[in-house]
Every structure is written in structure tokens, then in C-alpha cells.
Amino acid sequence: MAQRRLQESPLRVLVLDNSSDILELLSTDLQCRGCIVTTGSVSAIRHGEIDGPHLIEAAAPDVIVFDVALPYEANWQIAMNLQADPHVRVPFVLTTTNAMAVRRLIGRDLIELVGKPYDLDTLYDVILRSVSPETAADSAPSRDQISNRRSGVDRRTTARRQSDAIEPEFL
Image 1 (spheres, rainbow, N blue to C red):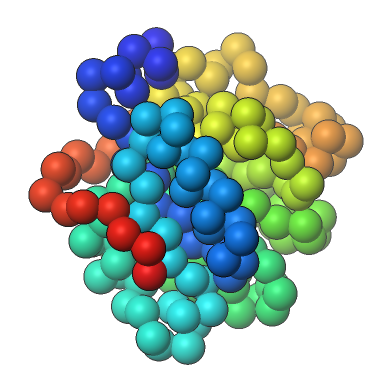
Image 2: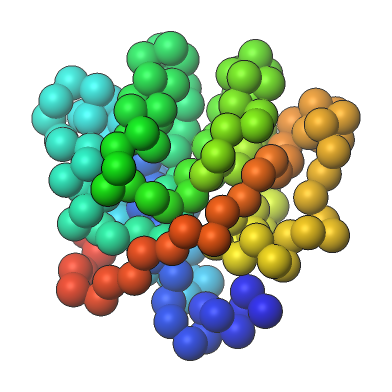
């Protein structure tokens, strides 16, 4: 069902990470899978060089892939501030190497979790589940599986934004 949705309307993904290599890798991979991708730097948001809510509004993503990296607390706060913005009602897929951060995120609305290291197919599957929760009911791992595999999924949402007014860009 998620694959059919992508054929009908390309999935819009906003990737926020501090690594230009990861931004390029994920952008290329997701574009090859038919997604429309916009990228941005978490660090640039943290330092006020990019306005996060404005970037999200301009990109109009169906899902946001956000890396919670060092400094964990600062980046965690950015993710939570963006998620708390009433205009940002899209699911987040958070990536992190910090097991403590992953445990704290379990149970939050609009968040999917992927522990690092991850493979691109796993990340893509989680992205699809985040925007199509009905396809994930049978495949969501338990808390033990999340801890053991260092990747997994928690709650899902049906919130979705649609827009076709913006071209993807690298920021």
C-alpha cells in the first residue's frame, strides 16, 4: 500500500543532519526511490542561520528525517521545538547513535526511531511506515527489539501535509 501511494504522489522528505555526506547520501537514495527531497543542516538551525519552521513550511514535507547527534541535548531540543510548533504536523523519523536518547523518545507522538548504524533499506521502510501507519501494524518491533537491533518504530500518526508548490533544494 505504501508503494502504491508513492506512485500516485511522490513522498516529500525533509532530511536534517549535520553531515553533508549523509545529506547527499540520503538525498540521492531517496530521490532514486521516487521521493522529493529537501535537505538542511541541524547545526544551521541551532545557530539561527536557517529558520527551522520556515524551512519546514517551504519544503512542505510528508516526513522529516532528523539526526539527533552531538550535542545531543541541543539537537534533541531543536527536534522537540520543531515538533511542538503547531504548524509542523508531520511525522519525524529520528536517527541517533545515543541509546539513552532513543529510550527517552519512545512513546512520543509523531516520532519514529532508527538507531545508528542503519542501512538505507531499513531507514526507507521506517519512513514509509511513518506516513502509512496502517502498513506498519504487523511489522512494528517491540521495545526489546528496538534495544537489541538498535532500530525500530514507536507510535505512528496519520497526519500528512500535501503541497506541490516548492522545488527541492540543498541548504
